[in-house]
Image 1 (tube, rainbow over the protein chains, first blue to last red):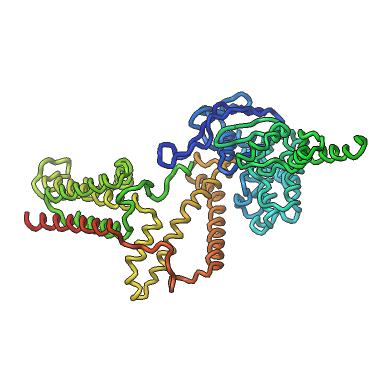
Image 2: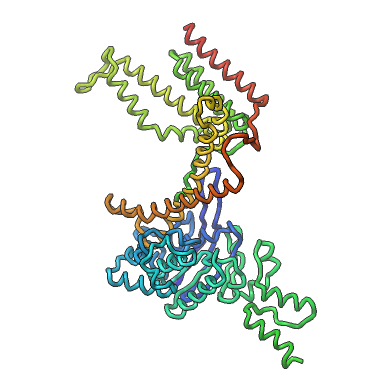
Length: 284
Length: 266
């Protein structure tokens, strides 16, 4: 499923003293199956941008094309679209409301108008996918631990089987195991369902490790767009925007500054190990 | 969606009226309200109008925002006008089926509408130039004498300001929840009343949960800072009357005297 953003502009509180331009003439396209990371400091407009992509917010100007169709024309079925572009918001666990976890996860597929059997099947599949223990399925969501709640809430979106999954800082507040779980889940989704993933995150290490493409948002505009190696080569500029580069890149840059000849285009941990090990091994 | 709503009416700008002590503004508004009920003839209305116009001018708030406050009572205005036009006994000008339009009725209706407009706009000047928190501070201070009658003035004021502070937080939360549920395919806009009520559940349950969570967190945070009520509590920004407040009081009293003089003499 391809998404094209065409000159999107969104202004909060337009026409009042509190007017704020959150997204400013942004254009880009995302291809089917891509793994894109969206980075930018707090308040840069990332969250507004992702809400425009599935029609939760309507832009003041510009539009979004999904599979070539303009989603902001009248009569476009936005509800069906939201089933295909799933958004996991920040702290999704605060959206749980049903008496038990299973019914809550059924909410999404039920809204898509699926029959009971299909709904329940998808809910079960989604709960299995997020690795929630079976005994939690019929507990009240409010009795779960923080991490389990997050799993249940994400299952609620996965149960709609979206083609595109947008996650807004899914690892915020999770422990290291929980964070690893999220990335394991995303890899699995990509492999088994060919899901397109758009990830908003502040963790440069995770992004370097997983994403294929990075878009940097600053002050409502996309200022950089490229592979992790390309984007992270602009360390100084990123720092000025209140962002950071992965620890791996920082280490390699420091080595280079100190006269060690290493390839600074490397961003993942595994490649870095090989590069550094190479210095000791056959290189000498 | 909801974020476009501005809650509380405060219009942030800098003006003579913005800088006044909230107590001055509350007292002033109160006096103005009384004066509106004292006026009887055209001169009184002119005085009240001029005073209001002057205040709006000095407050630097666009008249547009003042008029916006009237929208909410538009229906009440129409009802008041109609009731008075038809149900005031007097010289009949025109008969509409069984209803009589009287000369006195029209007079009373016009007066009532003007008074209501003055009242609403007058209080708008206060709410538009004072932050809700400042307003509760002012009220707390003004009502302090009631403590003698065992009225927990500080506690009531604290509850009010916490409640006011929570409104934008909960509106924000509501906005997030609504978006999250519509992202899960909830249809919040269409449908019959019966189905619409059911669509409220996925929104209200998380909203209440989060309201309680916020309340609990705040209570803990206050406890951790040793909050124990108003006894012996000092303020970071104590309310103090300045020069501008004394001159404002002078203006208000002069205005009141004028209105009373007009009412008595004419």
